[in-house]
Image 1: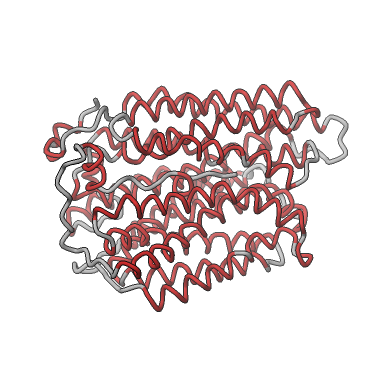
Image 2: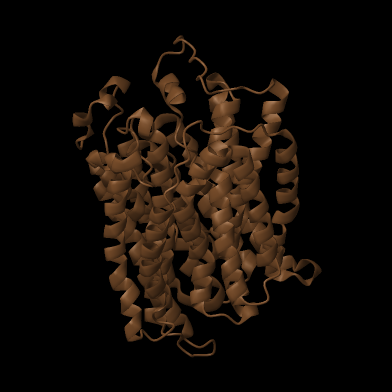
Length: 522
């Protein structure tokens, strides 16, 4: 399972909910925000089901894919780079389009953009399910990522707009339950659908299962969702999107395709261009913000060192989180010959572990977020080391319970860390910048997952050297390669735990957040 923040962690609590958690029970009920237009009681809970259904689709689709990637690769006769792009391409497209998707909702109306995203996601799912070759599958996955970036940002806006503040905790709890269900059910459903080979569809059923739910959400949303948008002038930073996309692709392409193509000399060009493009993007953002305040990534966010340090911690953590299951799945299915369903049952222990501990973090981590992030990352590192030891020592005799036990530990750690990480990073950002900051954190989360998949894929291929299926030392080489990549994951988590000390300390009073001098590291 490739677990990313929007699949496993609840959104950061709205300011009203955080304040409610910090105050005594008899505190005054928060007033409705001036932009809120609560729907009639029965209708708004139906609307909640509509928008959380879209988040569930996104969560399910990410988590359902990883466990069947070896089957996809075999069926399409594709290379390992295709498998990486199938997973990382979605995360990359999502990360690069996420902030723009939120802005488009403000400009063109959240209902319109939400429905466009759901419809695009549904059509792209059909394209994935019927893809005749690897190239079209990867292209459809990229479209899926862009479409998800249109629909997911609107979910929070719909909840905050249609529900009264006193109802936000329940609404976000429902959303969290939907995300958790997608995380836990994704690997199991993927293994089951592929193993049953319904109507001879095999792995294609994991994408086609999205169609009925996508059509239902589109129909209900079109008929029931009210339209709302930001009243300010349209401000969309298309040059910023272009620069950031080019820089990210320049970084990712050599990592994924380099070894497959024999590292030709021209492959260095995009790698060398990427840092330059990132610098040009930063310069463009400063100018755009100074001109009309419409920068894709507002530079004032980085005036608080805690935010910049928090982004670095988030990026590092999710390079490990987003990539851990990819190579493990290949090890179990290609290296050891496990079935898709057996792999799914073992790796499902990870989201089960998340489900066990994330409520603890969600309820008690608001004011002790730095502690929860550090402790959770340390537990994930320990789980990765357990998995490394099991792979190395057991070899061909690796058992289901060894994999499930180690993945359960990783899940425990992620459940402690992930639900509060965004809240910690944003804790010193002023309320007026929280929307932009949240978009940046979520985009960095997705980008970290994509980079992690590329990095561990490069390590894995470098160690295996493209081992043949009938090679006598195949299992030994797979064990060596998988162990090496798991060392990367353990190191990323351990470094995350070490760097968590640079995150903000206990939450400050709201009046403190208005003073930029309070942005120094705690």
